[in-house]
Image 1 (cartoon, rainbow, N blue to C red):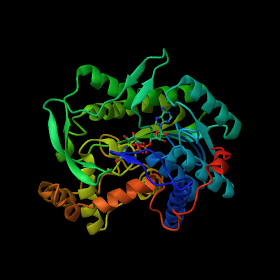
Image 2 (spheres, protein in one colour):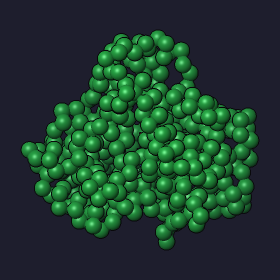
Image 3 (cartoon, rainbow, N blue to C red):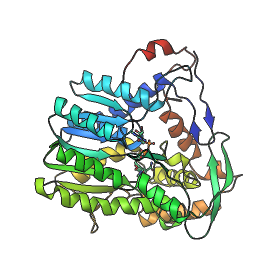
Length: 395
Ligand code: NAI
């Protein structure tokens, strides 16, 4: 079967399994080239199959020799299609980790469920004894509560409606997009899905099962962004969820005091991932930001960002480097005043006619396609992919 990309709006409907292998290998090569660093060696990654979670896992395994257990919700091949990129990322990551003599165990299922927590506890006991680090990197539109209630997150603003130009990846065009103000219920629901509640349940369950090593740390990922994006993010439903995540870090931090552990939030840079491509209007900011930061020489992809987080801001010579609110600021380069001034100027000039010449939409597209295994160097996209053979591979 020859696989061509199928994109609908800002969502990829398929992936190229062999291209996904090249993408994982590219990240491994980037970590190796950047050199080894010291970091905890027994790690649980919740949301491990793509974006920041996958990059965290690759950085820790190939930069610091970590053994990892990764949790994700992904689809394998079936009569409905080839499966999701994350499914293959899990397979290729595990194979590469094992070749390196490291554990790269994948647990596939709903991370919000108690069943998955129990599965992870059993796997930690069997393979690692305890963990030194828990990375919480879920991005989801749905959380199913213990009583079966389905709670959905929304991407809306609060206060006044917000309208701006968004990017339609499928048609490579700028289109007007609007974010309606959320109701109180929608805010509460988004906080339930993307806030800190589930992170805290995980940390409680792991502590009760004696799966946290002395001094264990946990980190969850957040975004704040510049003022120009506040209506889209910080003052939107997702921003409320992130505020809740930040507050939860304090609660977990207290709970970990007994074992000398700590909970952190890393405020990251905006980057192209499956989750961020879906946020209305934000990809236009992203393309302009990429343009500015590439010219300035400070651009980082997911893997560079996560390696820097662990090697320099969490486990470097100075220990954890956080601001006054105990936030680890990986968005330091994005929020540099000169970068934001240049972004503001460019963003104001962007129109549906000139956007290709102003923002790095080509770079954004390339990153988006690469997330799904397309457009990678060295992959023969004209060659048939043997899906039946791939179906025999287990994550
Ligand atoms: P992503 O969509 O690439 O990854 C999400 C991960 O969560 C995947 O591994 C997926 O399988 C897993 N997942 C989703 N629902 C699940 C479920 N019910 N059970 C088990 N696994 C599930 O997203 P991305 O962008 O890497 O996001 C991770 C975190 O980083 C999020 O909290 C996001 O808000 C945050 N972040 C992202 C930024 C960006 O620019 N992409 C910037 C700053 C923070």
